[in-house]
Length: 288
Image (cartoon, rainbow, N blue to C red; front, top):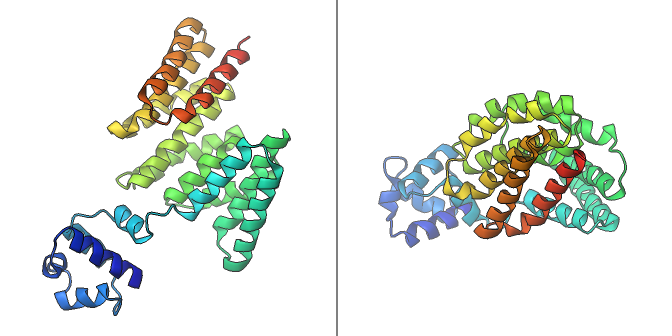
């Protein structure tokens, strides 16, 4: 609470808002002053109201309160991506051991899931089959959570390559309904979009084209911002893949090539171009 109070004061002062203006009818100026000094606590609902008085989103506030540092889960996933890109069993093992120590210390289920993810992605490095004992606990957890938040979308998006198709079908059918409840929250919306795009990619790779096509409308309904250019281009790539695999090889190949060119010209997340090109090669190879 002391950290939150200090952050609120800094943001309020940077915007030129007085304590009286920020307090509004939610709390007294004296109470808000004590909160900013770390001398009192405040309920989450009242904090939300105060942030609204100074026109600050809760996501923005939390980011500033944490000194603009990434969430630990995103830091872990970044490390996981680096280990897989390097095809390093040593890096994966070190990550797994770190998460195990954190789990023993804090008993947070997130660390347990991260251990499973390390083991699952090790199978891609070693070109072995994933063990059911590593993906089933994640599947059981996701089925057991009624209201998904950003974490659940993130977990599913990263575990989906290792789940059986029938499990993906069951989970993804309810993903949209779960996510739409919170789509006004930016991170949840991003997580939902990423999950659905990953679902489409996996289903295409597994030759479940009809099932993949059903998710296009869902994703398109979420892409209502200029910031979604990468997701729009990615969707175009998948549309081209479906056309190509459905027999419209010339049009499909052109769509995939255009998606790669568009990503290159946009300069937005250009580091993903090799992944797009790799996906296109997989699709072309499947039909040879």
